[in-house]
Amino acid sequence: MDSHSWLLHICHTVITFVLSIGSYWSSFASKFQFQNVTKGLEWLPTGYYTIPVADELGFPGMKTPFHLGLLALEDTYCLASLALVVSLMYSIGTKHFSVYSKKRLTSLEILDLEKKIRHILSNKLGSSNCPSVSVHNILCPKSTKGEEAVELNVNIVEPGDGTKMLVDVTKHIGHLIRRGQLSTSDVTPDYIDKVLRERVQCPDPDMVLKFGSVPSTCGYLPWQLRLTEIISAPSLRDFGVQKLQAALKVFSKIEGRFGK
Amino acid sequence: MIPKHIAIIMDGNRRFAKQKYIARQQGHMKGFDKLTETLEWCLDIGINEVTVYAFSIENFKRSKEEVDGLMQLLKVKLEDLIADRKKIEENGVCVRALGNISLLPPHIQKLVAEVENLTSGFNRSFLNICLAYTSREEMTSSIKLIAEGLAEGKLEDSDVDSKLIESCLYSNSCQPLDLLLRTSGEVRLSDFLLWQSSYTLLSFVNVLWPEFSRWDLYAAVLFYQRHQGQLEDIKRAHDSKDTSVENELTDDTALRKEIFLEDVNNKKRQQIENLISIK
Image (cartoon, rainbow over all chains, first blue to last red; front, side, top):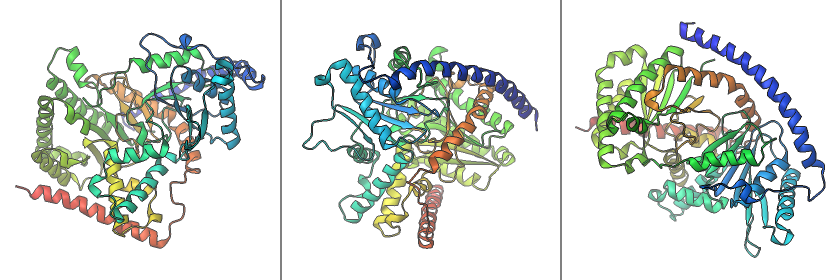
């Protein structure tokens, strides 16, 4: 082992020790906070959830994402917190969401998430003004033909969905070329993007909020991440208005240059 | 535990130039010099593969003066590489260009091919330079190759899975990516290695690229050591749910894929040889 490797080894040992003390304390603190926050949200009856007014969340110069990706990469998290973030963001104009989690959401949990979002929004806006909400897998968007248009679109993304949609598009393009309906020269990034957008029926996420300590997107929609701003937060458990506002401030300050 | 393969978005040359009241071109020159230094630091600690985002397809939108200046700088650096053959041999560095090289000026295409050809036999360390590159263009190129294979009957629908798309990317001979580092404090991937960085640790460093130091690299390695285990756990859990990878390979499928991929690689080699033979 040369001198650099030794140096790194020593630094790693010292930092690991310091971090282990820090993470012990934060796990103790977060358990304490988790009980306080989630007990109320999980067990109180319908209509409990309150949503702060948009003015409370908004600030001068605020940019609102069109599509917000929510990456819940913690071992456990509560659906009520997720529903609260979706509802808050809807109140300031975000209409498209995608939810990607470490643990796969069951169909019951997906229904529960939809119910919680509806509860929060009906409580705030009144049941007659509550938007039409659709929570569904990103690969099976709900058809709007003959139905009311979806005003709040929540896409559930599962591991492998991002690559699976590219595999499907590849096969589709192969068929079109074989039948003479498409020329190879027409297969461009813009063409593939158009096909994908028709399938998933939502724009690319312009902001991702990543919860948890793992600094990675962990397989979330590779094609769509092109220009997404990735903003991290330690936990979804105690993620309230102030932390959401702080994340939005970071997002609003960013200026995309698009290569120029 | 040292990462084997790191990727770098070398961002901040122009902001550095602005801060220091120097010309943009000088900022880019400082950036290239920093790359040489960083590669040496990487070799010192055992990182044997580095991928850098040198020139995006989107960068062609910059002013003609800036694009011409960057191409001139690239030409000088590629010529230096060819001239400094001894150093490359000593370190056993294989240099690869990833991207749609046909978009570059012809004299640069030829130089790129010469460097690739000159170093293709080395395998102790690897430098992948992304030139005229965007990740979406890379994925499109892979999808196009496979779709042509399907249309020509070289492949069947059941052969197509995420592994096959990965095998046709420009980076098909690279090791899995362990760490992606972006300087300048920006928190986006800017169309760089979107596929390859799916399960990679992302380190956004708040320092401009020409000011990147050996200590910033060490901090990134420590960051990798701290989080790598957590990421492995998530990847393992997700792999078991991923349905885009074929679980069972029949002999026929495996053979068709092998022949197809061999054909793809032969075409790539042929392109390099054609470029070198241009006078």
